[in-house]
Length: 98
Image 1 (spheres, rainbow, N blue to C red):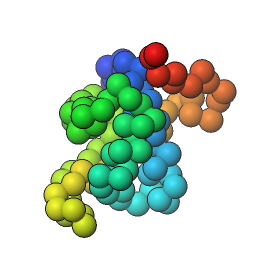
Image 2 (tube, helix red, strand yellow):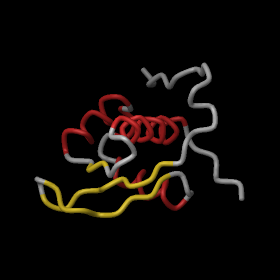
Image 3 (cartoon, one colour):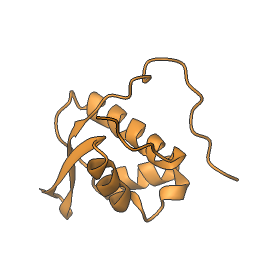
Image 4 (cartoon, rainbow, N blue to C red):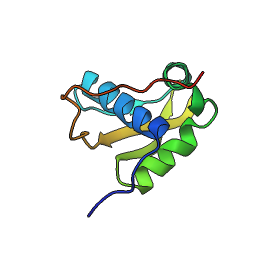
């Protein structure tokens, strides 16, 4: 089944989540406020929209997440990220709009 195409911002988020998940040895990643802030710094167009974008990525079958309990209360917990096919190939990386 083919997945829905992503906007440049949601593609950048997907790739960032892949990196976070890989750096955590494919174990659950809790997106606490500092991680969400790092994502918003990397992809400014998602400022205040990261949680909505997570829901879209899950619905479109790019990631799997659930709500978990973290140090700051209920937070998104990423437990599966589907590998971008071209992740290890050279690619033009996301450039924020000016």
